[in-house]
Amino acid sequence: MARPLRVEHEGAIYHILSRGNKAEFIFQDDAGKEYFLQVLEKAAQRFGIEVYCYCIMGNHYHLLIGVPLGMLSRVLHVIQSSFGSYLRREQKWIGHVFAGRYKSLCVEKQGYLLELSRYIHLNPVRAGIVKKPEEYSWSSYRFYAGKEKRPEWLKMEWLLQEYGKTLRIAQREYREFIEAGIKSSVSFPVDRVVGQAVLGRKEFIREVVKGIRTGKELKEVTSKRFFSKADNLDELYRAVCRHYQISEIVKGSEGGRSRDMFVYLAKRQTAALNSEIGQKAGGITFSAVAHRYSRTVRKMDQDGEALRQWEKEAEDILSRVKG
Image (cartoon, rainbow, N blue to C red; front, side, top):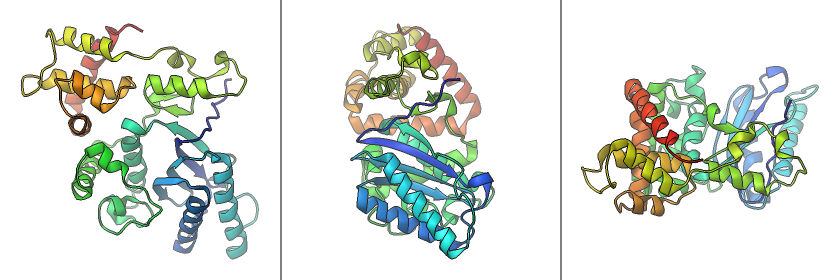
């Protein structure tokens, strides 16, 4: 069986999941959770990592972090060994603390950071611990929701890149995005994970694979078929126009569904920048692209029937794109 890819390089962003050995509750009290956050803060200062969000549960934790200087394995070793030493010292823990190697997923920042942060922040709600994510004290959501002042080591500036507005407005729209996820029972986007190690658009995945220096042949990599091509923005544009039987995508109310679909698929399927997508989508701004994409995702989350119809149209459009 093909093993998961080991993706480690400078500047990468990762979703990290690590569980207690034999699913044991390694975070048994608030003191342990607080100590883990202290360890995380020290790691951020020592290794220059960027912590985007976190959630500490009873028997596992989630992190969404960036490593500008690389050294992911070193960073996680320090975090987990430090916490393990704490448990042995303070709680007389015997044996392994964590269940084998942590799971790491290399994530494309644009388009996927938002979705993964929601998945992480809704962990306590899905587990039935709280009804609202802001009621849980051991995740970063309270800072995102504006309930508390964020610590300096928690990086929230990326929200402005998604929504292109003030922090207060971005926090409000993020709260709406989270609430939509509660209503629709959003799950982890496992169907879009490639090689058990990468989540992003096809161009991003291809670039990640090109940068891996493991000495393995591509045939040894799980889901290798996803690595072989990337959908082109121009081809996607033509496919959308053919589907909606239009000659071009225009700005304003007349653009409507065709523009929203093009923006949605361009964000999901190509490596184009928001400015490039906006230029093709009737000349809208880069911030309008981010806003329309987020609005579409929220709408689909709230309406199951609309989601099914949307996915049917998207599938037909992508079938028209040459690969």
